[in-house]
Picture 1 (cartoon, rainbow, N blue to C red):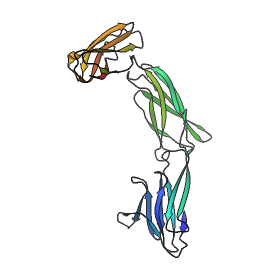
Picture 2 (picture 1 turned 180 degrees about the vertical axis):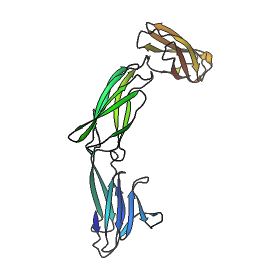
Picture 3 (picture 1 turned 30 degrees about the vertical axis):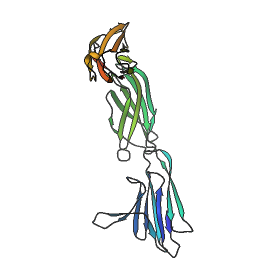
Picture 4 (picture 1 turned 90 degrees about the horizontal axis):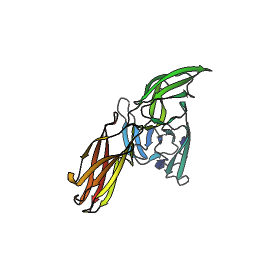
Length: 317
């Protein structure tokens, strides 16, 4: 944005404010250079003096001055932060000129889409932890006709290969991958990152979503809340550990850890209900007043899951 001070007196720009942290500006006037940035300090204005062979001299300030008849320019910058599509920003300038006390410079950029991944996210839905599923995605680059995939970063449980095809002088890559088997405690899915030779090593992600059904399910979960337990009374709660197949699940050990009360204040029991393993934790009448918490480690005979931990807490009053 070129500008000129038409006045016969100096006009000060007293305050410069960017509309967001993504906006930055450089002001050049009268042989001086000022930089406005929002990182790390919001709307910080500094004067930068460049001396050949020496580090830049930086002086923080609050305003710039345009002498009578002086000409200059405002150079606007916009950090897209990987946004594709249009993005707008502005710069507000408050001046000492009574005829124009405020100016707003507006600028817009359109973020280019380096890669088009189809589908944008792979949905593998519900799957058993021990199985494997295949998926396929295609990738093109609207910005570069000829390009290469150089390497892949993938989390554990993933494997993939990629094949290049050409049509009308444009490169398209087909990625064929497999997911699983995974650890029995896996949450499911992950992010594969592919590195390319586009724009000095740009990368693109392939997102894979899956809901993993492990070998066991715990209901209502790994936590038992007791709330308030009356002093001299007892309280019982149960957790259920159920295999997702017909395995005859048994508890081999019941061990308390991290107890805030004496060991005799809590008792654990295990019993079967069909294929369900029921774990009962009882707060006994001998529990002292105060905070009550601990862990119960349930040893199991399962070939892939050797133990499950149940946390509990409450207070005795």
